[in-house]
View (tube, rainbow, N blue to C red):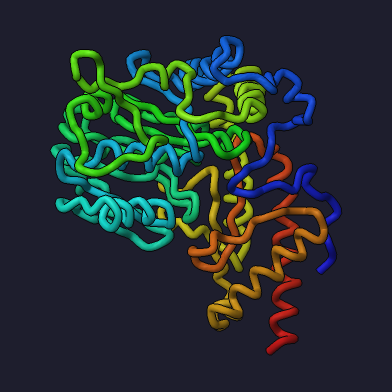
Length: 393
């Protein structure tokens, strides 16, 4: 099979860190305030600008708190779990690597006694209708490692008594989230924004704030997890400074400048509506190709729950299916190496714990034409790997 004639303009299809916005260069960081304390007024203003811009673009309610916290989305979500779980029973929904990690933390590290587990294999969702409004609920909106997402928020109750904990790191800016049904939401700048890693965003509803102020967990909390402080009267209150730009630890002002640049880009192209549309257009290019390609299919079984950001594909070719696990991994490595050598696509192998396959990031910073141009190259790489597997047999 001959190589396709046209290559994507940008070969970065990694699912994190993700492609920078179109036209990005180091000049975008020229506004970074370096060599100064992050407590100084101009730097604190930039941090607050990150918070305010997120609120405005995403439509986060005014009475919700938004903070910048350490350790990316993982740090933000761990911070919430360790600070707030244990007040009531917990329902955990797990169907891929990271939601599985949250389940391990809830049961193995926090050792919450009253836990109900709802699990599904890669490619499927658990029974979301089983969520009990009287209990806390832990889930990921978009399964980055499985390409399976929650299709909507209809299964979440507005009259809930428990809190909803939503890991939304590969969903924010790609879906219109029902904030009124979400109490704790986390994400990082490195996904749909294409920002730099190491910083997380944490959103708390008024109900989540009430939990923090009324519930004291029976466990020690490291400094980077602490969101409350005692007032002069001894009452526990949320540290509001953390949600006004006063971070727990020292942030990278280079990363902050980069995030502000990405947020400005989102605003300039039309805001959330446009970022959603760009991701959907990218996904559609893959969907059109999958529908006419006999050797590949989506890992996500139900079309309604297929991610439009982290698009995961499985190989359904009979010769591939006959290979053992190690040989299948070798097949995928041959495909991705061929694409990398041609500077067509970088880092598109499936997540290490997922079934052997491909994962293509389709977030808003990826140019739609680039996804379309990638598809013929996948056919070419598949044939390269297939001929190599035959030769090795």
